[in-house]
Image 1 (cartoon, rainbow, N blue to C red):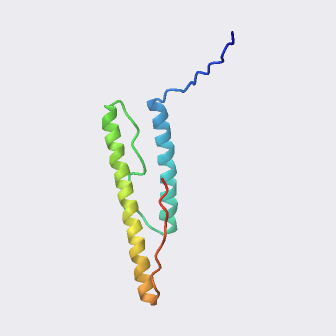
Image 2 (image 1 turned 120 degrees about the vertical axis):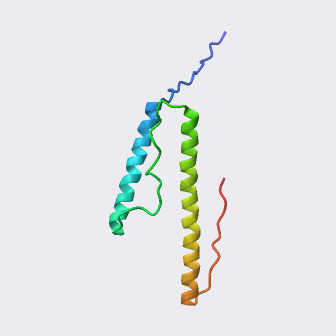
Image 3 (image 1 turned 180 degrees about the vertical axis):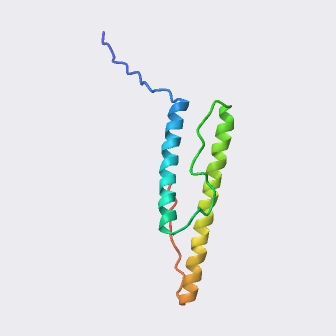
Length: 111
């Protein structure tokens, strides 16, 4: 008769306080980064309003919070794609002004 060792994984339950702590840390990091860039470019306010991160999760309906966060993520992704295509437009414009051929940028999709 052999006794088998049984491993029971234990994972702490994430709480609203844990989420708020991460949100506050990320918000502070983004705020610091934005402030440094604003000073570097001698600007007084950011180009877009991303509110420097998510709001802290309150006592309200958690699905309202999830929808709110999804809206922030969509805003951030939209801005990211806007700047991606704006950079490409400017790259092409600069190449045309300098009479250079525009080179295709090859990429590989990673999933």
